[in-house]
Length: 340
Image (cartoon, rainbow, N blue to C red; front, side, top):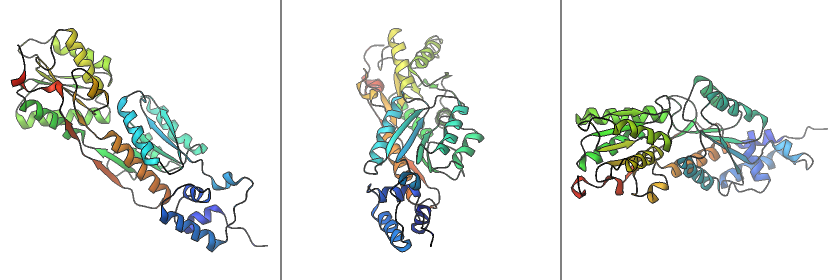
């Protein structure tokens, strides 16, 4: 009696993943060329699914995990919407994990993928370590990283250039007549903290300008308020007339604290954030912010993951999303200011 072909052999013959075979055999949407390859492999091998325990034989959950440090941060909400849009029509469900700041927990989450609860992972870590990089590279399912995981790491990545974003914000503030431009950063041991600090230093060096830089413990509204306590206490000759905040939440905190200190925005203090979250448009005054394309990055990550699941042997790819300055009320030009 001849041995029955397995789903693993179908996937290997078609040059796709087991998850892709699962989608096709379960009637779920897949790319036309993937469907053609799977159906051709099924016909060539004479593969017949066993109705009993079929899901176990297919080895696919039709679930994708999306892991971020803080799901409450609005930039991750935008990114998640992009992921959902990119996954539409694939038949996959999205599982969201908020991992917190502990790298040990993040590594444990990646390694737990071996339990088979998801067919793929999209992850946007604030911090990285050799242990995390090793876990991602050796993950039992396809992985796409949104962010900087280190040059030469063999993973699909979606990146942006937040250094350039800070340089754009700095140039904009100079154009509006500001001269004492401060920078409020989150933790420097994070990827965005490092990149945005480098961008600010690059802008200062290129323009010959200097300004106070404050590093706070987190990328939150409360941390932004605390940063203004430091900046507002400076000697009037050093007190900034503009602030670049490393994300929108920090910017909101700076604006709220400045308002409580009777420092008017933008008349006496211009503020620019990074991320261009949905709240930037509705805050009063509305916040000028550098968009890093969170929604598009999520969408591109979903596309890369689905393609990786279809073609596991494809060389790693990188997608770059460029920053864009969105000017609103919080950085009105100096010539439009009213009063001192």
